[in-house]
Amino acid sequence: MADEEQTLETHEEEEETMDVEQSTTDVEKSADVKQEDSSTSDSDKSTEQEKSETVKEKLKTDLEQMKEKFSKLLLGEDMSGGGKGVSSALALSNAITNLAASVFGEQRKLEPMPEDRKMRWRKEVRWLLSVTDHIVEFVPYQHTARDGSNMEDQKEFWYVSKDANESEKGVQRSDKWWLPTVKVPPGGLSEESRKWMQKQKDCANQVLKASMAINAEVLAEMEIPENYIDDLPKNGRDSLGDAIYKSITVEFFDPGQFLATIDLSSEHKILDLKNKMEASIVIWKRKMHQKESRSWGSSMKMEKRELFEERAETVLLLLKQRFPGLPQSSLDICKIESNKDVGHAVLESYSRVLESLANTVMNRIEDVLYADELAQNEANKSPTSDHTPGQTPRHTPTGTPTSTTISDFMGWGSDQGES
Image (tube, rainbow, N blue to C red; front, side):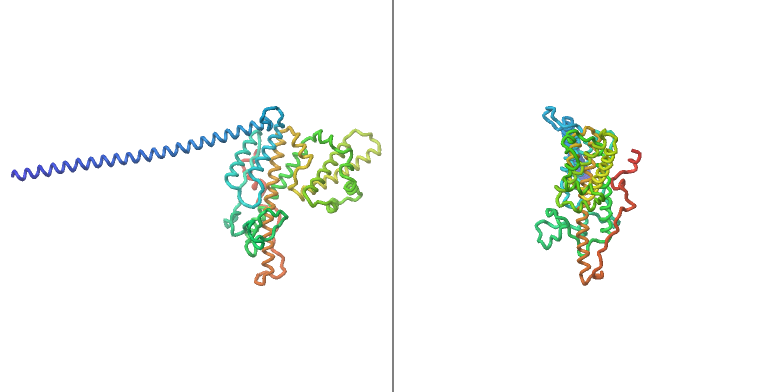
């Protein structure tokens, strides 16, 4: 019996020892888990703190950048503070123009804008436009075809590297040799992509026409500076030159035939003609508004000047339609530099930026459609082609799609309707 009691006591002691050890192990594990949770929590807090500090640094950088831009606007671009700066209107116009040139640059390819540049444009142009009380925000967006394809679809068209062989480069649509050449698959674009590209061209054309009309109207509302008037010749003949003056003052005038006889082989010559036309229009209008005697002779002169002025206006309109990407004329530059109206400055510069971008986008679309037409022509010549030899290439009907308006394309939502 004594041995049995001793054995039971020994088992009880062993069980107590095992319980103590198990408890110790559980405590250690619990401590380890708590330590891991604490470490994870500290790591998450550290990450959140770093993110918060990054956001604060970015906001601080943006704030400093915004202060610098507004300081430059307030000082009229004269950071020395010497009082030799330009007007606020011109400073704002220059700021919008310079921002567009910095963000967009020269659009050599038809491709989506990088997200960082898009964000920079929206952020900085919002700063510049904040000086106005009411402004419509143009939010660009990207169309997607029904089959889900978009502009990034490399199966439809791509650009050839400058280092490629001449046989690989293809044919350039324009004389701008520095632009990359567009290539499309044999046979051209798919019908869906061709229609989509044509629709984008029509939309860009709407933006181009609207921005041109806005820009022309705003420039017309700006007063003609005295320094421009002081530099004008005495009459329209001196401004235009004998040859152009004789052509525009004939009895039966055809503006299309007139332009066909003028050398418009370079941008400089086109701009020179535009400057001469604008100067002559200002001269004739000033003479018509001067207080002259109401004799029969002076009345006849006024009628002729009015007729000549209308002809010059028609020629100017044709030049703007044929060459939408022309640089600003001498009169336009003089008006912008002398303008003191901030509202006019914002509308003129913003519409000019949109006009330039829309014209560039249309040109890049034309490059793709030109490559598509060449590919179709080659496919039509191939004996294995399903088309009859000599058949004309397929063309998507032109015209503005009835389902898309300029408001839709520019991103003007229903919330902008009342304003």
